[in-house]
Amino acid sequence: MKKFRTLSAIAAAALAVSMIPVSASAEETYHAYIGVQSASFSFRNAWYEPSYGKGVVGDDGMVYFDQITGWDGPTAVNKGGVFTDAEITGDGTYTVSVTDFDFGSDESLNLLFVSTDIPLDSGVTISDVKVVLDGNTKYTFDEAYLSPDAKEYLEPMCINIWNDDLGKEEGLFGYVMPENSIELTFTVSGLGAASAEEEAPAEEAAPAEEAPAEEAPAAAEETTAPKTGNTAAGALLAVMGVAAAAAVVSKRK
Image (cartoon, rainbow, N blue to C red; front, side, top):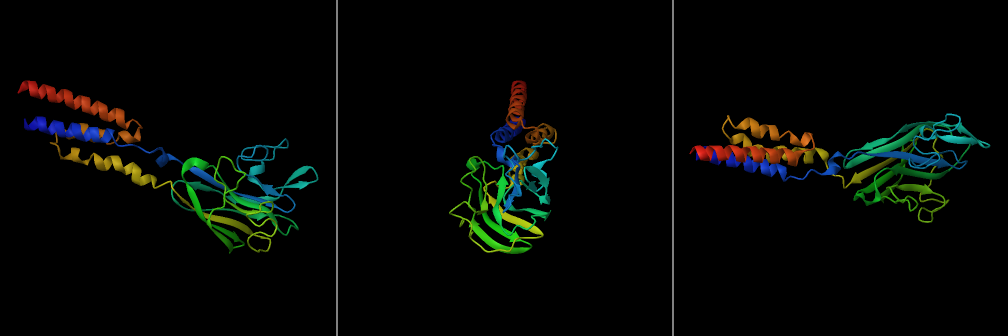
């Protein structure tokens, strides 16, 4: 009967593993990019914009999203730009930026924003958005002002000369046209920490280690199931196998 009780304990541990939910958000990775437009319409648009967004290649082979694109009459020209984009893997503070650009004689910006692929309905919030020009912090939004024109994704907007809430051409803050760098730093919350969620199944499976050494391997194998994405199926097979073994032991008694 002692052996039967041990097998029952292992079955209970395996069943507990099968009932632990694995959050999809733990594996989500999002992205953020700086968006900008100067007074003469030299620009980097939002990543999803169909004409000049990420991956769009012009007839002349120009990849608009990988540069600041300006104009010589109707002809698009490369105005430089080295970008630092952000990969968002969890809650934290991130920075997007552009350096080595040439806005010519422009003295102001029409647009300045963060373009993300985080869905509006994701439950994620963005705060503490800092505008840093040539290394100097010019303004901080305690709560991100989300562009009303972005219908699918979170898009914190800092400058928009056509938007009343952002002060239109006067803006919310004064600045001298940057010459070397433009940075936007922001804080993301609502995604949680992926590592904490991934470790949960291993902590729940720990009781199985207390079983006699001859039974331990079967339970130990099930702790690796979350890596395959088949946690529930693996645990169910463990329960079925343990139940069959228990039946055999009971019959022998």
